[in-house]
Image 1 (cartoon, rainbow, N blue to C red):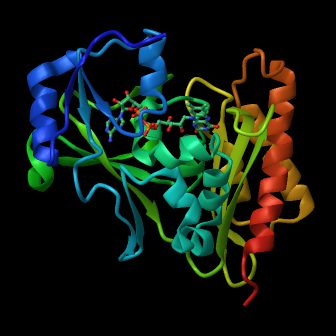
Image 2 (image 1 turned 180 degrees about the vertical axis):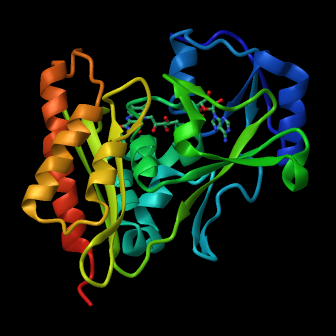
Length: 294
Ligand SMILES: Cc1cc2nc3c(=O)[nH]c(=O)nc-3n(C[C@H](O)[C@H](O)[C@H](O)COP(=O)(O)OP(=O)(O)OC[C@H]3O[C@@H](n4cnc5c(N)ncnc54)[C@H](O)[C@@H]3O)c2cc1C
C-alpha cells in the first residue's frame, strides 16, 4: 500500500525542526530512519500531514564518551552502534543488541533515537538501554540551552508506543553511564528467524567490586510487557552477593516473575516467561565471563 499524501519538510537545524513541530502540532511527525514510521504510513496506521525529516540536521549523530558518560546522538544508526570500536570494546551489552536488531538494511537506516521514541515494547534498544540505566535527553521549544530535560529511560516509556515526550519535543541524545573497571554486560535474544523482532530478549549489566561482590546490576526485558521492563527485584537480589550459580538461578526466577508476557504468534505466555528465566541466567553468566579479572 502507499501512504496517504503528505507534505515534506527538511529543516537544517534543530531549532527549525522544533519550530515546525510547534507550527503543525499533531499533524506533523518526525522522520528519523523511517523504519517504523514509513511502514506504519504505508499501512495507514499513521497518516501525518507533514513529515519533518531529521536527516539533514548536522550534529545529531555523535557517539562519544565524555566525563564518564557515553553520549549517543539520537540519529546514530543501529549500524554505527554495531560497528563502533568504542561500543565493541567498552559496551558489549550494546554491541550484542545492535547485532541482533532486524537485518542489515534496517540497521543501516534505523536510529537509536527513533527506536526509543517509537517505544515498541519489542524494541531491542529499550531493554538493552534499561539494563544500562540510560537517560534520555529531550530538547523542547526553548532550544538546546534552556529547553533541555533529562528523563530516566524507565520513566520515558509510559505505555505501549507511548512516551513522556510533550508536543514540540525531540529526543536529541541517550546517555549511558560509562563502565567501571570490573563491569560488563550481555544481551541475548530469541527470535523466530534472523531479522525478526524478539520472542523474548534480556539485557544485563553487572559490576563487581575488588572482592568479586556484585555492586551494580541492571536487567532489562524485551517483548514481555506493555513496555520494555526493568527486573528490579532481580537486580536488587544480586547486589552485595557473589554471583555463584545459585544466586544467578534465583535472579533468573525473579526476572521471570517480573515479566508480563502475553500469548501470541511468537509463543505462549508460559514459554516466554520461562525464556526470560533462561536468558537472564545465560546473560548473567556471559557478562561475568566478560569481566576482566584483575
Ligand atoms: C523489517 C523490520 C524489522 C525490524 N526488526 C527490529 C528488531 O528486531 N528489533 C528492533 O528493535 N527494531 C526492529 N525494527 C524497527 C527498527 O529498529 C526501527 O529502526 C526503529 O524502531 C525506529 O527507528 P527509526 O529511526 O527508523 O525511526 P522512524 O521510523 O523514523 O520513527 C519512529 C517514530 O519515532 C519518532 N521519532 C523518530 N526520531 C525521533 C526523535 N529524535 N525524537 C522524537 N521522536 C522521534 C517518529 O516521529 C516516529 O513516530 C524493525 C523494522 C523493520 C522494518
